[in-house]
Amino acid sequence: MGLAALAITLTNPAYADTLVDNIQGQTIAADGHVERFKAMLFDDAGVIKALIHEGEKTPKKGFQYRIDGKGRLLLPGLIDAHVHVMSTGFAALTLDLSETNSLAEALEKIAAYAKAHPDRPWLIGRGWNQERWKLGRFPTAAELDAVVPGRPVWLERVDGHAGWANTAALKAAGVTSASTAPSGGEIIRNADGSPSGVLVDNASDLVGTHVPPPTARDYDAALALAQREFYRRGLTAVADMGSTMEDWQTFRRAGDANQLYVRIMAYGSGIESAVAIGGPGPSPWLYADRLRLNGVKLYMDGALGSRGAWLKAPYHDKPDTRGLPRLTQTQLGNLMSRAAMDNYQIAVHAIGDEANAVLLGTMDDLSATYKGDRRWRIEHAQVIDPADWPMAARVAKSIGLIASMQPVHQTSDRLMAEARLGPGRLAGAYAWASAKANGATLAFGSDSPVELPDPWTGIAAAISRVDENGQPPEGWQPQERVSRETALAGYTSNAAYAGFAEKRFGRLAPGLRADFILVDTDPMTATPAAIHQTKVFETWVGGGKVWDAEKPEGGAQGAEVVKR
Image 1 (tube, one colour):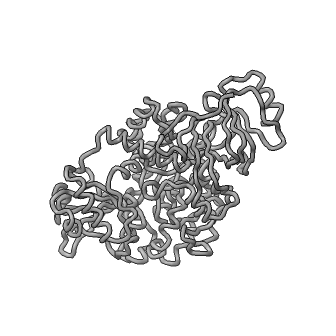
Image 2 (cartoon, rainbow, N blue to C red):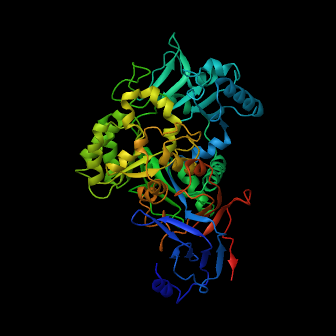
């Protein structure tokens, strides 16, 4: 906004307006470039009224409050385009094995947890990763029995696509040698045919459905913890991939109590959940743009780590399998049609190259019937056969295609992906630049709690293809790096666009919500290593402060400003 427009804005000032100055402001502009400014004005509703640029005069009157940015960098609040909100919170309430580096370390932690919680009928946790442990196989029920023999134990793999049970849990669920895996799932078995303790993808429900459900208080506590994890890292909005009715009711309780601080764009866990929540279509925006049901989340396949991702050719390190399709093409098309008829946005998990090919083909076919600005989403899009990029380009041109990808997966999965895929399929793996070149809008996220909800690690990976230890020094498949502007847009304006929120938040501009952060590192100039270490001083959502690094135990606060 120029000086003339700013003068008009201030002729009839609302005296609860707030000026933020003494800042180095940056945002992605409408044209995709970085826009810089030195001050910002927002109103009592938390809506931006003006950005003041270099060469323009900062107003001296017409506002009641002033925030001194102390010369720090001010950026738009960041958006994680793919999280699991409640799982992130529950991970903080249950046993977390994500940082264990060996089976022995995990078993020691499980034993300690069991001893610390003698009253819990089931021991629940997540985060194990046999690849990180360098185990070369899945863990077994017998190994769990050695540390917890009497109570059921159920532990989700880090990617959520497999579970590890002890004998007591298998017995409680009735899983035996005679049990058969459902379509899209696998029971890992011992040589004698008995279940070994790990169940993959849809087979996980054989045990998971027997776990005692959390209470409403548990849900509320988990949401509070998840929000804190998000806003302390600079996240002001997230896309929740797989919301259940219980999740939605938790969000609504928080909103009703004015305790929903992070904006949530929800995608129902399958058609049934989406319709139960939204009824005839997506919900309206609620709680001053804090919550909306956008669409539906579907699953095409599993994950690479558990060899559930559906590949065109057999796994390089297990030639007797191509993975586990969770839907047939006919089932996928029917579900997508059901969602599209009621204008639900469609988001489909697809990791393997066959899963992505089938999904893109279905999108291409259905785009002839369901026209307009659909913005159908591929969640993960981890391995795409380069031969299928023309199909992606057609979908992008006809109805809009969102590639919802997680840069940190590339750095975490690199060695595992090489083992699973072999050298011949790496050209289409985690191919962010190729997705953008073929017309897809890149929306970046973390898949929390699979990875930490840390956008800074994601930005560093996106621009370098190098992990936090500097490996590999030249970058892995470096041709798929993206520019710094593209990386920042992936966590701001593009992530908002991916959720039909671009007219509400995601950038800093007049008429949009005043969601912003103050940080110590400039992602446009800093090294990837420095970006990894970014400190978030403050996080503001809708003109109210929700995080202050100097008061980390204070929780979400109202705006703390200087009154004129």
